[in-house]
Length: 99
Image (cartoon, rainbow, N blue to C red; front, side, top):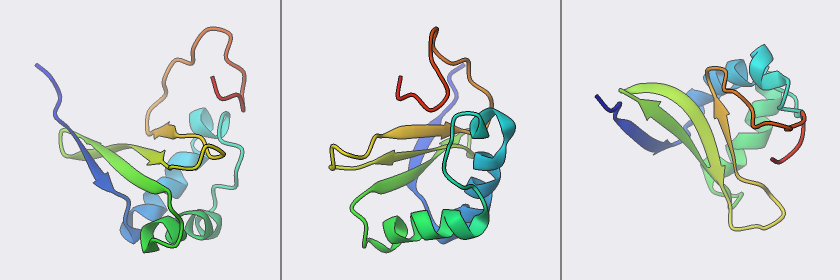
């Protein structure tokens, strides 16, 4: 049976959860930016407030927050998904790489 997924905008209330996700060892291995709450707020509040053009979303699976994703129109900023559970990286992927 498929698990229903929903994409919703990131809110201020999500920032503590996002900070915890980014600090998880399986994410921190790939995520090179600071993951403390103050840094996450500094990075993501402009997106939430609309002063940064990037759109950041929470992906919910079966009604529970499962990952975050960002989308931007700027070619200088990559789109990424931050899972709340470990994923198997692609063969040959290196920490900090975009592949």
